[in-house]
Picture (cartoon, helix red, strand yellow):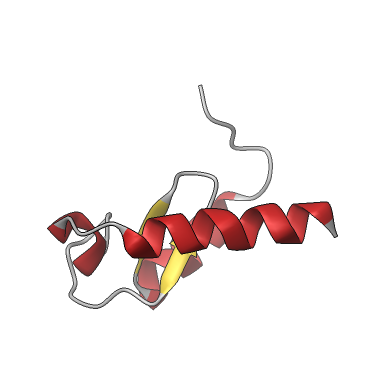
Amino acid sequence: MADQVAAKKILSELSKREDLKNKVCADCSNPNPQWASLSFAIFICLQCAGTHRGFGVHIRLA
């Protein structure tokens, strides 16, 4: 439950940012991304979201 609350808070903060980086996919620059990677604090498109899911949980931030 705490993880879900934290995820919603992060998503809310990302959505409030005014910079143009949030208006395009962080990976491929497609407009209007509809997914978010909370691990990387980025918005991504559906296609790139599939790629990120394919990385699995063994990929970690350095």
